[in-house]
Length: 346
Ligand SMILES: Nc1nc2c(ncn2[C@@H]2O[C@H](COP(=O)(O)OP(=O)(O)OP(=O)(O)O)[C@@H](O)[C@H]2O)c(=O)[nH]1
Image 1: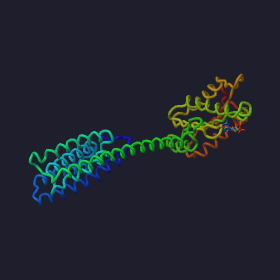
Image 2: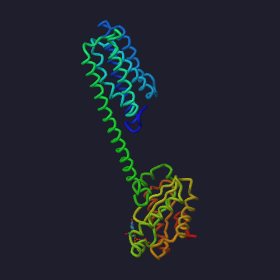
Image 3: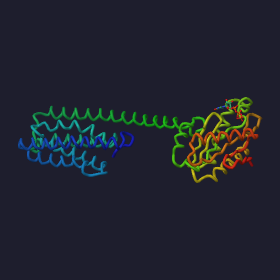
């Protein structure tokens, strides 16, 4: 019923209730005035309509069904108002509320179909109501103009709904792109530093989480020798290795220019150490190419396991110290603070 490309279900639920509230009040008030004016059948029908409008406040979690029910109750009331003329022949004027309500509840395509069918039914009713001896409208100008205005309103409503859908879809798409850009590093497709820091607040990364701070060795030399573009390609390739060796639960981020961070959640300590080894191994197996030149790249890793009461900043600073040690011990290795071991790559 509700086109997901238009307003959210929450907005529609609110609209449904506002519409139902107005519908219920109007129906009951009109029922009383119709009764006072001697239109007993109309008054009775309005009471029934009033109860249909009350249903969203009584029945829970049935909004979609109720919305369609209310719409068809509205259509039935419209048909009755056409046939009976309503109060002193003013009934058909209520037709003008039908188009916006239909498009909002049914969306563009279903709404257009519903309105075409309703327009045909109403035209037939206008034509026959006099002949069948029900209400007699003063002249055909009135009924023709009502139908003309109703049709124009439906067409304009359709255009409005079409553009509303179009722009709302574009807006949602843009929002998704912006959300992605705010979280992801465009070059490597890894989490960016800001988003990784946000993710680190999750309880899974408390005591026991392992921080791996990874830095490309002699990267300036890569840039200077092969150019900045090749340097970018190297970073992108390293990012793909980091992603392929880690799991969905890990945070894998570009931490700075040629620096990366992986954090494994608590309970994954052994895997974290293996991860560091795998990264060295995978990179050792790959030769980068530029023209006729082949070259290899290595990494240094500082590894630290978070202890209780240790802040994230402290963990990062310890991992950074380990990374510094790995660099000063000759690069291409992992230094873990916890056991002071130096892990040479395989
Ligand atoms: N191509 C490229 N280079 C980058 C990027 N970000 C940082 N760099 C370069 O990375 C290099 C880092 O150089 P240094 O900090 O001297 O480190 P290093 O040469 O790797 O030396 P060690 O860390 O001691 O192994 C600098 O030349 C930066 O310009 C990037 O996005 N793309």
